[in-house]
Image 1 (cartoon, rainbow, N blue to C red):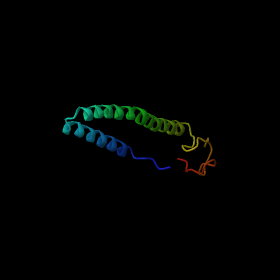
Image 2 (image 1 turned 90 degrees about the vertical axis):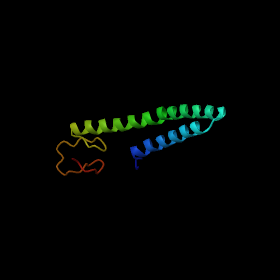
Image 3 (image 1 turned 135 degrees about the vertical axis):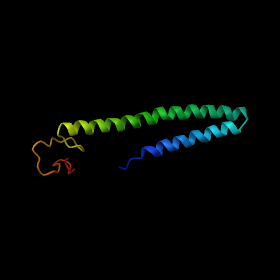
Image 4 (image 1 turned 45 degrees about the vertical axis):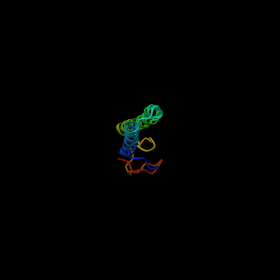
Length: 97
């Protein structure tokens, strides 16, 4: 599965927030301002609901790979590679460091 690049998510969120701010500045209507306020709250909630788990998952994967590397395990599946001289994990076929 191909992951979405981190910069793509940040750029998209910044663009949406910029459009929302421009709408508020250009428009003088109270109903549009009210909608924009709820939109800003929605963007913040979206960030909390989507971005926080996304970043936590990336951090967790990084820490897991680091721990597996320190303990001589396969970084893909966690198989114990102690004594393996072939350079390939017998469990998943990934190249061993």
